[in-house]
Length: 560
View 1: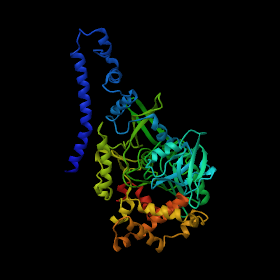
View 2: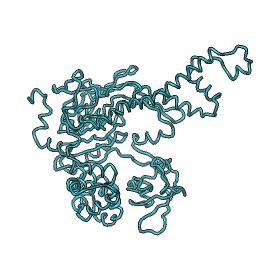
View 3: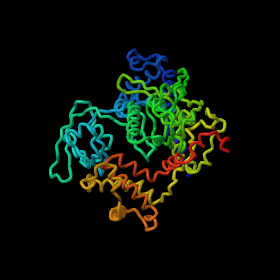
View 4: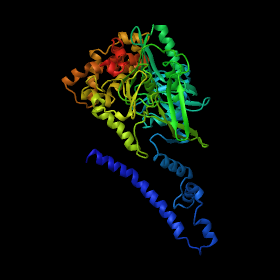
């Protein structure tokens, strides 16, 4: 069966229940309107209304189903299903957030949450503490990296196949409330018992900020939240104090967006006052324009923004503003293409509606939103998966921009709309040739698993380094460690041969060191190591060190 047939069948599976539901509702109305017996008694009519008030058909139908359906059914459930059914036939990004999920979804955007303050992973059905958040409740009572949480409020959570979401719900809670945890710590015979008072925990959006060399600074954001702008300003101060940062690489790869105002504030730090950053327009929303308002903290120095297919929404606002104002270069791969604005409305029961009310446009007037059909959400996201798989992510020539959506920047450079931000400099997905063997190790999580086990078993030895920088300079994945890794993957059943191992050895060692460092020293040890094999970042550094950076900021006709 072809992929198209499979997708067609999937679509049929989605629409058949909807068609049946519509048919059933029509049948109900026909039955009520055509078969009502005028000879029924008043008592009968009380339970069988005969007709509904058309002013509120949906509410009447829900009431009728709730009262007379053959089996008992929850009214709240009916309402939520009706809301989901309505929204799924609109655009791909309008959504309903149940009360039970509201805080979990909203907390990262607010820049904080309330809980016990740990970073953890599920390892073999056990909660493993990667690190207590500095200054948080868990650090204050004495939880340490490598601890295993086996019980929460006397309920066993180890080895019982609880999901990460379930664990999070057990550990999070309102500020001031208490939770009891039982902890296994390597080298300690008995469980350690802690009572932790939950508190407000900061949730950072900045992954790392550090100097790549004497003059190039690097800043990476994972999302845009209420605290993003302050984090950026503090990072700039630190980098300028550490070195004389004259160039910057802003990494928005993998950043799916967040709060629009945060993106505007970040863009304002790069663009001179008065210039347009972004504007929005909708059927019932007047156009709203956001201009740079202040003298930015990094307004005139060379800038490169990194994007990829996972960069969306707020990330695209920044990349589009930088590109359209000829402020810097955008480098990487075409971004996701989300140019719809959602307004969030809190409902009385604690749930919320996020409804698309406008589209946003870059300064040249480009709509970044990729095409979609109302109700065709599956096709919308399938198209994104296809982009990851197809050759258009490997060869620039296979990306065919729509010539009817061509725009000109202030300097006369050509940019395109209609489906994400097209980078000024395209970097193929697999610039470093990875073997299928290496991809298999990554996809099965074997590199991460071995690195975590090694760090956990050698925590005391690895903690001898004074900081992340000393770890990076002095620790290496030597041959004995690498041999243990090969023995480990052989035990898991992964087939390998000498040729596969030799071709991938350098890349494997780099990844192992990066993940070992992360488990002990966090992102400060991870990214500087990981970046040594980052072809996109290497190309950005190369552009800064050559005259090509300025060349790309000129109109194409001038370059020719």
